[in-house]
Length: 350
Ligand SMILES: [Zn+2]
Ligand SMILES: [Zn+2]
Image (cartoon, rainbow, N blue to C red; front, side, top):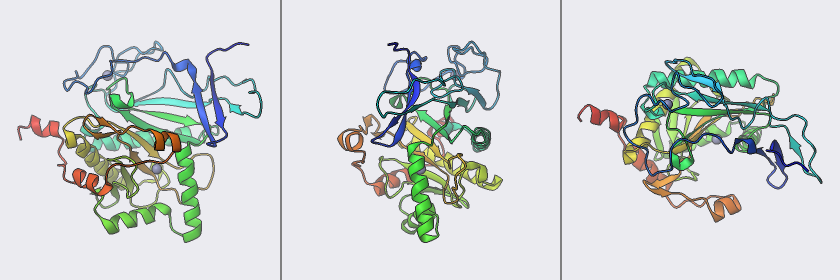
């Protein structure tokens, strides 16, 4: 019996979710040893970075001399058009399916040493438009059920390259959290006539203590039910199922609030703040998602500068979070942070 590198999706019958098995990726490139902090003085261009302009990637392709953002198909995709189609059926009642889809990388900037927090508001606005386009292009494909856009930032979340970038997994299934949120939103809308997220926003505004940033059409807050110490949601105030439904003004407002959150994160400990940042947008599988409310979630793994929130018994073993911190106090810390990035204010001599 042959045991080649496995590349498929396997159904988890107890959790009722797909597991992507992409064993061909184990040799993917990894730049940099694990260390506590990335060096503060990264070069603007790194000759050995596979995301910098003009450099050659593992596929042999050469990056263009790009000036803003740059999108390309991941050279080591988790899901892809070349994933094996003719899978042998598993033994017993187990189920599998081809790991079809599209995996992409989006570089935020040609500059190796920037982070999303340091982009100007209009550069973030441009990035939001790129995400809109990707969601529309990939979501329109009949085989794509969902477009997950996410950024992993920091070595503590396993990022092998500091060059500012995010990833896109456009998959033939809907990721579990999105599925759960979609079901909850649908049920709430049917029962109350109100989008679930509108009730969340109303409760947050009524309390007010956990709001981090706000303007006419966008808001950021540490949710009442936060699982991580510095968990923050950024959302438009109106219920829009995806980025694609935002008006130009809403995109601009969203970019402003997003920028403020990112700057406050970095200012907290005067260091690049690590996080996992998914965009939660409605599935593109043709279902009804009127009550789905687009938002960005930040899941920062650190509780203190060198202290990880380790996931253990309750979280990994049982699936529910044990939070050791108060969302109101953590929100107060973030609210107190200035909205000018510490690197910018030290550069200008303040
Ligand atoms: Zn680079
Ligand atoms: Zn969400």
